[in-house]
Length: 112
Length: 116
Image: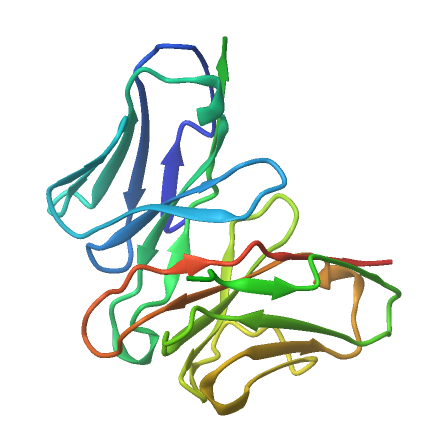
């Protein structure tokens, strides 16, 4: 069992749909990154959060510290949102401070 | 401000050869991380520099991998000799600040290494 679990692994949506990607983790501390990787592209940080909720444009990220769970929501999805979305949790102990443990990613495809 | 850059973007080498990957972090970022994604797997941590010092190299697969960070600026990751299982995408990331806080990491575009 992975220490950082994402669901779903693959997601196909129609343009305009509301999308939710979930991340549950059993390790690390309660701070994490949501990352985006387009096909053939590099990795872009969407959010880093340790509590509550953050919003950037059509993207919303939430984290529940007690339940060790985070969600990434995309409102009014668009084909350009098609990418792999990766949850990465910070290791929070000792000399590993700041290192990340990654989920396998969720591949999102938004159809026009 | 320039982001994290990596060179080369793609490298194809034969088994047994040596390859050196380079990462230039964002200027002023003390933390530099190397990560790797092999086919079908999640991205895994390799090592972490704070300035020129190795803070954590627990993710390095074996002694065929050697990382350096000259003067706390750019970093190189050398694989010698390369094996087939070293194929993958190597990412570098940097962040500012040290201590008991968490800083956003900025990722480079990655180097795709293919060992044949």
